[in-house]
Image (cartoon, rainbow, N blue to C red; front, side):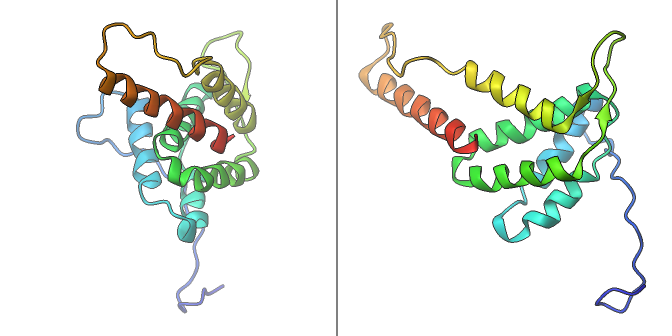
Length: 161
């Protein structure tokens, strides 16, 4: 079959993490690959980026967790794109149906949806229970900046969830 460009369509192969300059291990390479794609995401190209993310080669539950944690952390650092990242993980839940083997014997296999829930829950539970600062010698300006940073993190987390 031919696409709209008149060229034959070929099925895309899974994207293999490429050895990147400065990458120390497989998970670091995977994180960089995911971040490279996420840096290009916007509502207009969401489906294209999601398709590319779904083709990233993930071998086990540890790599799956790394991929999802990278997406969640990016969403929390960029609250203005939280909705786009949330849409991306929602679409990825439908595209990545595989169950990934555990890293160690005796561990449980993991699906994208389950790993996402675990990571988001852990991030939510790690939030401070109050916005109050401890006032440990920080200047008023530093305390105000810390308060703003905490509020932004709370709001980004709620928006992403």
